[in-house]
Image (cartoon, rainbow, N blue to C red; front, side, top):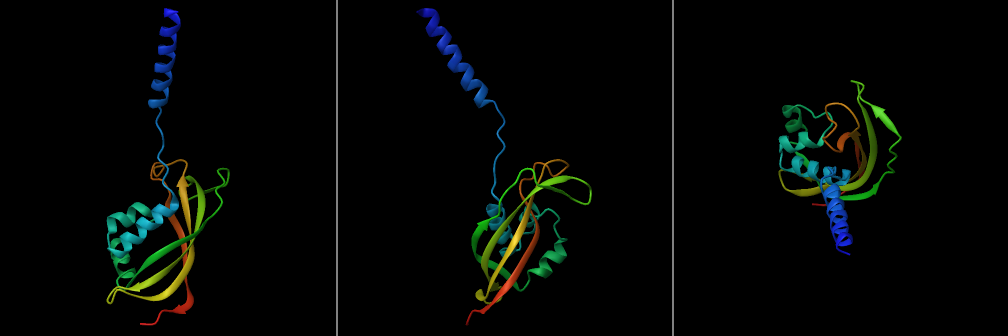
Length: 154
């Protein structure tokens, strides 16, 4: 009886030791990265912007692009299907998985802080499976943001 108790304790301890010591990769959803990107653009925070982009623009271009407007009131409409077997590769030959995010938002005039236009679009996110960006998580790769044709009255 005593040996059974000792064996049970060792078995339980071994289970906790093996499960606790495994390195678990944190999952950060592409939608979260998009929200972080939106905040970086709103606050003109280049450092945070770079963390979200697979191929970020130079800081001067970033500031020029978002001097007058930013995007807010983001609504994720759909996360595209994720297929682990569907891969692409960048210009350096590093492989990645991809996933699309479909969204709606408002374009905000920076000077007044007012919403001026309804927008919608999609963003392609990539997740590297090899290369130097392997542990960066989902990164914004390609985006299309278009006006819905609805201008918001002032």
